[in-house]
Image (cartoon, rainbow, N blue to C red; front, side):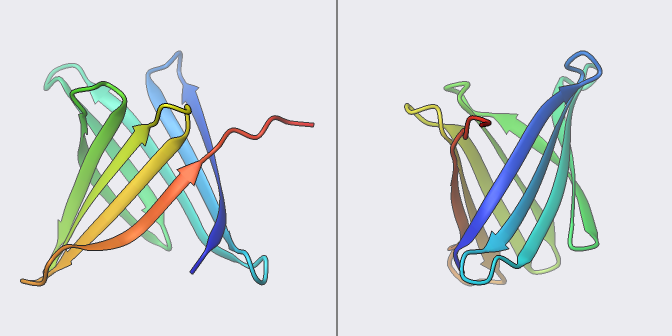
Length: 123
């Protein structure tokens, strides 16, 4: 399925947290099929980043890892037999790219979703 997705990212509380809200609509029918909210924070005591994410009446909390090139984040979660891995990067064009992979049971990893977010200047 191809979507037109918007992502709004804002620092809150003087940069203490990052809030990311995404909405996806089908290209063919302009029907909303995805609405998600993520809250990213840093824990000084454990020196780790955490994300609390919500979508489709579900929520999860997971640890985020900064990539060694400092141009991205990696995270994932396990729920029963399902494991996911996600990577967010800022590419050389300044675009925000995400690749999400899923493993179910003993199957090989499959691409779940891939997206590129480009800045659109307000009119």
